[in-house]
Length: 560
Image (tube, rainbow, N blue to C red; front, side, top):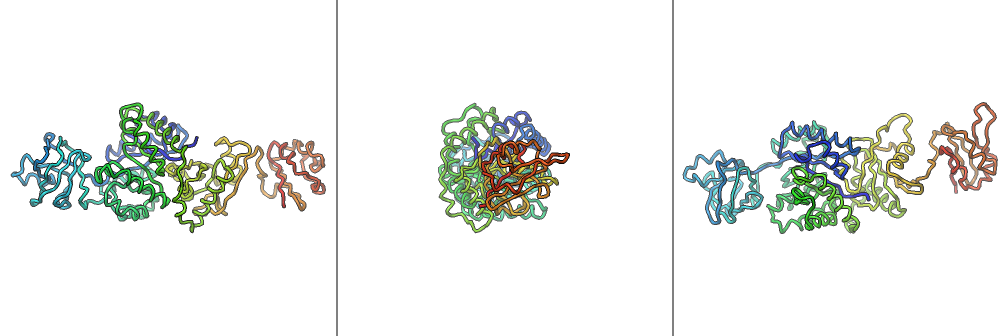
C-alpha cells in the first residue's frame, strides 16, 4: 500500500552511517532534517554528502531540510548547578552585567540573551529547562530583574529560557541563521525551516534575501510562539509550508492547549493549500525502546486524521538506539491510520478560480470515478503537484518532472511520489514512449489499468501550464509512436487505421490475422507491410490485428 503522508526524520550521531541512512530511506524516510542548533559546518557537510550517497544506494530521492536555530535564550555557563527552591527570590541578568551587582552574589542566574531585562515586565512568567522550573518576574532593578520561584529544581548551564508573556525583541532570523542559510544554499538543500516565527515579516525577511540571491528555496515557518498563533493566517499566507513545533509550543502556551492548537494549525493549512508538518515527541520512547507506547501510536494516527501532510521524528532518529526501526514503525502507523480516510469538508472552501488548481481538482475527481491507478502530474516547479496534493486525492499521484530539485522537494507533498525523467529534451523524446511506458514498467501497471495525465498544451514540463487532463488505458501495445512522415494512414467515415512503419517488424502477423485483406506486403526487396485503403470499410474493428502486432505499430481509431 502506498503511504500518503510523508516522514521527516532528524539525522544525527545515531544516523550518521551511510548504510544506516540507506536503511532508513528504504524503510520510508522522505525528508532528512539537519538541525543547525547542533554540530559544525564540517560535520553538516559530511552528513549531507552521506544523505545524498544513501539516496543513490536506495534509488530513492529524499529532500534535505535545513532547520535554522533561531534566537536561543539560554542560561549561561554556571560554576555549578543551581538549586532553585519554591518562593525563593533570585535575580536574572545578562552575563555582561552580572558582575556589576555584587549585592546579589550567589543569587544571580546569568543569561546569554542581552535584552532579557528590556523585554521582560512585572508579572511575566520565566520558564527554565522546557518549563520544568518556573518563576515570575517581580521587579526590575536597573540592569537585572528580580524573580520569584514558583516551581523549583536543579538548574544547569545552557538550559533554555522561555518568556511566553513577553514580546521578545530578538529577531527570528539571527546573524547565525544568515550564516547557516548561506552554508545550506551552497550545499543545495531543498527546504529551510525558520524557527520562532512570530509574524509574517519574519518570513518575508528571509524571502527577500533569497530573492536577492536569485534562489527559490521553500520556507517552512515553525509555529511555536503564542504571537504566531495570533498572526497565523498572515504567516501561512507568506510561507511555503508550516511546522507545528509542539516542543516549545507546549512550554509557551501549556501542554493542555497543544492538541487544539495542532488541529487549528493543520486545518488552516489545509484550507490554504500549503503543506503542514507535525513535529516533536511523536515516538519519543523509541529513543531508548524498540517499540513505542500506545499513546504515541495514537498521537501519530490522530495527526494523520487531523490532516497533516507529514510527521516528524527528532531525537528518536538523531540520537536514539533504533533509528531504522523507528522509521518502520512510523510507516506502519501511518499506513494503518490512512485506511480510515479523512473527510474533506475544507474542499468546499477552496479557491478554484486559478485554472491550474481547477485542472488538478478535475483530475482528482476523474481518477476517482474511473478507478485510476495513478494521476500523472507533469510539472517543472512542483506547484501543480502541491495543489493536487492539497486536494487529498484518493488516487496516488506521480509527480513527473525533468528537474532533480523539483523531484526532491516533492518528497514533502502528501500523496505524491516523485518520478524524474532523466532524458527529457533529447531529439527523439516522445511522451507516450518515454513517460507512460516508463511509468508502466516502473510502477508495475497491468493491462487495463487507467492513469489520469495532467499537463500543459505546449511543453510537457512548462511552468504553470497544467491545463489539460487525459485518461490513458494501459495495454500491451502502445499507440502508434512515429511522426507523421513514417505513418501510413487510411480511413473511411467510421474509422481510421494507422501503421507506424518506423517500428513495424514486417512479421505479417496482421496479414495472417485479418480475413478482409486489409493488410498486404509489397513486392519490393524490403517486403514492407502496408494498408490497402480500398478495403478498410470491411474492418470489423475487433482489434485482432492490434493484439497480434508485437511492436505496437498498429492503431485503429473510431471516428464516430
